[in-house]
Image 1 (cartoon, rainbow over the protein chains, first blue to last red):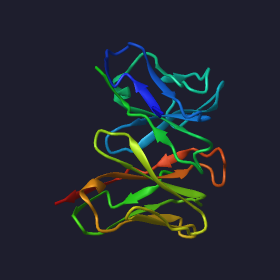
Image 2: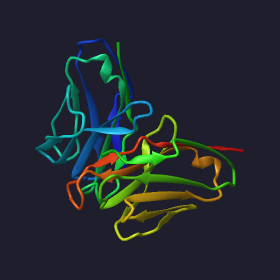
Image 3: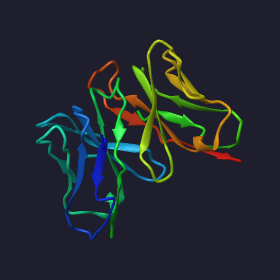
Image 4: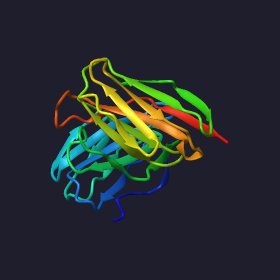
Length: 114
Length: 113
């Protein structure tokens, strides 16, 4: 099993550009999550999904969009990139609700917006 | 409602012990602990459910005091490999099966030879 994979590993965007961060898992997990991590601030939940076709906002959803058409994939879309979106983005998955189950994290995407 | 971790940072010599605390202002259903090494993804350590359970992972153990709304992570006879940032996470909704986690800001642990 590859676990949770993310692409790209690094990306530099200009202000106003858009991009999609890819995330895939091969563990047949129902729940998937997107977090951003800023230095010294811990992990903040952007969006999550409890299954294909079902997504919901987390703590910091503004400026992002998600979709979940399959169990395996959960892409994160950034529209009109802003410097405030410079961060490390982690995708994660869990078999069932994370309140009782461990999360598996992908390796992360380091994004810089200039 | 972000859980508060203390200390923010700690430096140890190999073989020394450390305690990392995580406290919440609201009732807790569970507490989760993750470790993140520099430049890597967070890795799950353990979940503690209400009931005051103590769990262990290698020489790392933890306790959960539901009454005090806090958890402590105990690192015994620390090794160089224990270096990293430790995060606790608590569910947003008490008892909720849909509760996502809110993470603390982390405790940076450095173990020196």
